[in-house]
Length: 284
Image (cartoon, rainbow, N blue to C red; front, side):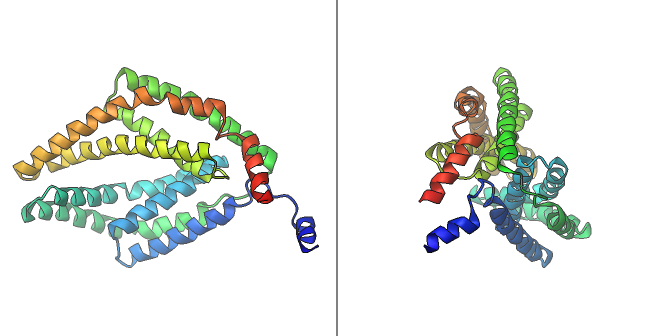
């Protein structure tokens, strides 16, 4: 009887009703992390987590079609890009068994970047944007949500075809980076889709793998440029790793047909399938 009353009062849930709760959790987390950064605890893990949570919230805003809010959050991520890259650069240099002088050179660049962020009150500005802009204004009705997903899926498919074709023809760094950014957007938006179907998990696994290959090349291309003042052994190691990463990244565009097929089929990005997944979860 209690179950009957519960179902009468609550009614069927739309596939979107759990998203705002998850978004609120990410929102609270990133604000907590920003307070740590404001207090001077700008650890590499903290900066990485701030950027990751902001990108996820940006992806959710894009799902809801709130482009202006999404751009504001994206700008927050951009403010911390150089700091995050330098922190990863320092970790990489240490793994190369660099000497104290090499590490000191990198630490000098890191200190300069941190001072710049503190001088411009970057963390407080990011906190203000996240506080006011990082959550969707309203939840869409199920029908408009399904329609939005189908439209966005087709947009992703069309844009990817062009990016893959361009990068396959001439796999230069700029084109590979554009492809990487598109894949990152699709990955974060896919993570927000309700349900944990096998097709969704497989897509996310492959997206992470490909994104990692492209990201490593982009990362090492910067490191190769930044390391010109470091010792010869470190520069040699850096050049070797950069060339290996470039070779792997240039093979990526020719392997992306699986993603185009997945988007075209709608097995993951389908409002109808998400509605079925929501019904199945309520049954369980």
